[in-house]
Image (cartoon, rainbow, N blue to C red; front, top):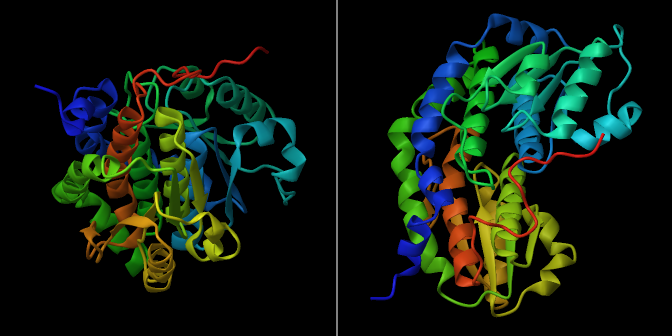
Length: 352
């Protein structure tokens, strides 16, 4: 008997690990609740915080920096590791002390740029908080402080549960720092409720093979606004690295300003709608459908409901399993092996 697409996805190492994301998130939330108080002291005492990563970890940095600004009302930005290494003056603004905390994110803690940046920053007097899944990694050892997702590590080349759990870890640390406000307390409570709401993610993930197998998609457009733009970027990367699918990522209303010209039958639009702006952003998806595209919408009150009633930031981790399932399904439908993506290794090691 020929295996179904869903069965072939379930047989991959990547999905077997992605399917345990709920447990990894639970453990990451506990790690965040018991994180050293010095981390909050460093972040809250800074004039500016820089979140940095490469690849998927850069998108984690973008989501964390957004949450930092929104929940704490304090300056934070995201930057690729390489930009901080090669062009630090364009990223790190001057201030009274001349130092800025840098949150360096790396699943393995061994990525060349992550370790080099952490070593340079510590030497320059910038506090470094290492966020990783490996507590004995070079990054964890060189960082001033560290946050570890205890169950996030994985064998797969592309990031799945590591991304989801480190996202929950950083969001919960930020929520803890914002607990003086009603919004911060709500975010913390909703993040703590994620393990009980994980069926939202798994139910949506089960639908992804049907979406992937519905057509030979010529192009996939991923739309997400606000902090969901970081998740949309991660979705675009997953579709690209696992299945080499032609993929574009845009903020929804920006998609109207030119890129809408790619829409035609055979294009799939993935809409990530997570907050109060969803009403306006959903109109863009409907316009694309009227022009011939197909759409899959993930949001609190849409065709595939995810995280209804939760704080918008708490919905973000729930989006990852269906995104990962879709990427793996499309990869297999296109004849690719998502466990062995072309030209990629799990850790990027560069010559000195």
